Image 1 (spheres, rainbow, N blue to C red):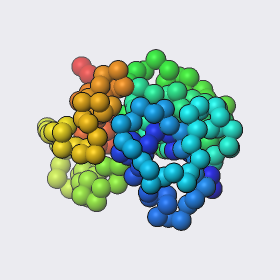
Image 2 (image 1 turned 30 degrees about the horizontal axis):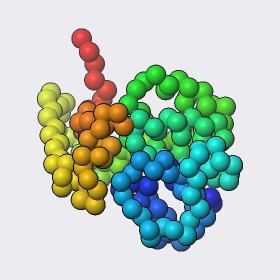
Image 3 (image 1 turned 120 degrees about the vertical axis):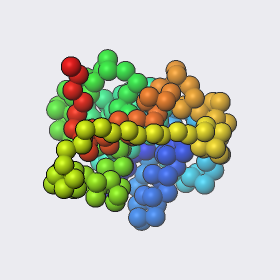
Image 4 (image 1 turned 90 degrees about the vertical axis):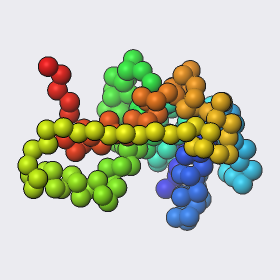
Amino acid sequence: MKFLIAGLGSIGCRHLRNLISLGERDIILYRSKLSNLVNNEFKEFLVETNINLALEHKPDAVIISNPTSLHLDVAIPAAEAGCHILLEKPISNSLERINDLKLALQRGGSKILVGFQYRFHPTLKIAARILSNGDIGNPVSARAHWGEYLPDWHTLEDFHNSYSARVDLGGGVVLTLCHPIDYLSWLLGKPKFI
């Protein structure tokens, strides 16, 4: 299987290391050079700086881990090319081109998975089972808290320049820390506005 990793910041490096640990070596890297991390350990892999050139290598799957504001710039052409996609959350910092992505997925025939990994957390899976079985009745209230201190979050990069601190790259609390929004919707159902 051939992989393309778009974005080699903190999570992109983690995906690459995971693929390597699984014995995968047919990996292309697409870099926009926006990351402030230096990754000399990955020199052996082919690097493209143009998404269309990267897709000419015919990857089977694309892992999109670039800044949020650039997700759809990779996801739409990858979907058109028929690549299966693992897209880091959130899908985008804007809803403007979501329909374009849906149409590209239909035309290309590929599947997309958004990286909300807390749906696989053992404790949350137990909570989901308990809630769906009605073992504790119907929830009437819920509260979640999530906080991060940016200087300690990604210690290998200057947090001032990281995507999570920059609105122009799709950073900010609501987008970057959206895991509770996802897992609460999974556990309790989609919110209803009245």
